[in-house]
Structure formats: C-alpha cells, structure tokens
Length: 247
Image (cartoon, rainbow, N blue to C red):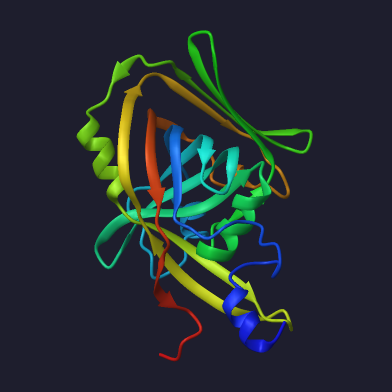
C-alpha cells in the first residue's frame, strides 16, 4: 500500500479493518432513563474543565438502551452528564460513560472524545419498575429505579433538551505519552423523532469503585426523572476550544 493509498483509506483504527464504519450514525428506538440529582458543588467544580461553567450543582445520571445503532450494533450505556454553559450557551458536559460494546467505545473515543469505558450496564422493565444497573466486573456501581410510565411529559420540553449541545474533552496522546490532541468538542443530536416521554418517582444509588468513580459525585437529593424513547442521529462534532493552541 503506497502513501496515497494510506491517505485515501485511513479513517479509523486499524487501517485495514476499522472497528466501526464511517458515519452518519442513526439510532432507532433509543430508550433513556435519566435521573437528575443534586450533588456536592466542590466535587462538581473539581471535574468540569474550563472554559465550561456550572450553575446549580446538578448531575444527570443516564441509563440508555440502544438496540438498533448504525454500525455500532445493539448495546447499553450508563454514565453522568453535567449541566453546563459555554459562552452563554446551555448544554451538557459528558463526564463518564460505561458500555458493553467495542465499536461504540472505539468510535466514541476516537471521533468525538466520549469518555467511554468497558463495563456492564443494563436497562430493563421489571413489572411496574424501570431498573437501570451498572456493574464494573463483579461490583455493582450504580442502581437506578423509576416508576414505569407514571405520567406523560410535555414532548416539546424533551425535544428542546435534546436540541441543546453537548460537550466533550477529547484527549489523544502523542507517541511519547504527552497530549497531541486536547480539545473541547461540541456536538448535537439531530433528526429526532420522539416516540414517548414519561416521568415518575425515582431513586439512585452510587457505590465507590477505584476505576469507575461515579460515586465521587455523590447523590444528595434526587430532583427528577425522565424516561423516553426516540430515534435520532448523532452528528459529528466541532472543536470549540483547543487547550494546546497558543493564546
């Protein structure tokens, strides 16, 4: 393979059999359970990078079932998103994500900078309760429960939230171990078809773990819960701040 062939072919690792295909990436019947809780403001400030700003000390803990995802397959994800603002624009900072499928781990990290790690999340309906769990190896790290479809939610409010930007800290190291890419990335979800949205009573437990430290943002009070199903497209991102650029 000559140099021109390498340039034309390469878009992801490994060169001759990439872990995921080229986008766009469409998700069908994506199911969310999002529990919003109040946490320690000092702990929150310690993990949110500038120039992002935080307001109230809130965290959204997410359990997401993705049964039909273009190029990525069938998988489940769980993690934390922190409400933030960037230059006055409200959005969410993706702080931690754990999932059970290699292609979206590789693609998420390489393309956007999602902080994805391998673990075992689940989201299932048990009788009258929606139950989300996250296990890291044999250890239970998170458990979320919610009353199943107790009350409908105004769909316009959910669509507005889905239209807001999300932010990621993308880190790609150089061969000497120093950062070669260190960027704040913004991305959007588009082409959303909302198939239903509900709220209800909810609870959330987070347990300490050395390698899955979700409990470092402790649950002080559950504020609200949201369950919804949607089709959506995950757009590629743009760089809004380069930490390695000269001032």
